[in-house]
Length: 145
Image 1 (cartoon, helix red, strand yellow):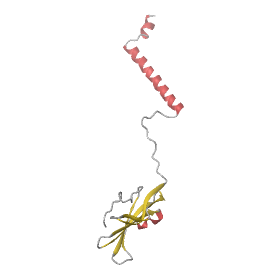
Image 2 (cartoon, rainbow, N blue to C red):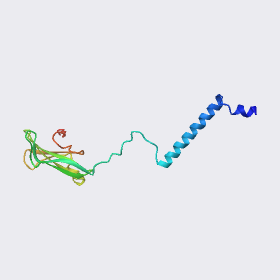
Image 3 (cartoon, rainbow, N blue to C red):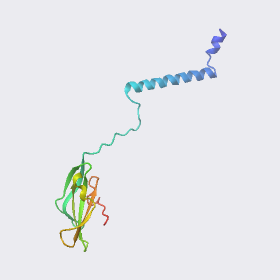
Image 4 (spheres, rainbow, N blue to C red):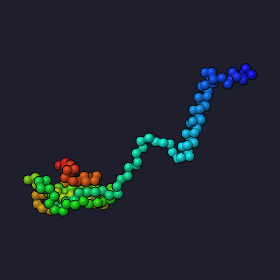
């Protein structure tokens, strides 16, 4: 009988064994709860980033740096993967007339090119960008060709 009592004592080894068993039971309960309720609790989880269906661009049919948009200020929408565009029409006396619009994927072949204009002495530089309203005057970054 003395041996039976000594084996159940809460001495250093008995207390350690009891705590280890309690931790195992607690861990088992947590695992079972996660299986029943679907997932572990995650702290500070952010929702997935959903991209909008359309890209919004600034549209102006005739604009100067000095006077702003003079004709046709509007917003245009194109499917994601398309671009916003600004055409700069310049001459040697640094006149800069701009046309801003949207370009679908199929029309993006004219992004970032420089060519001569049908009007003698002028050339056209196009600049595309891919974020909402990136072609607005305050967001436009022009790097001269």
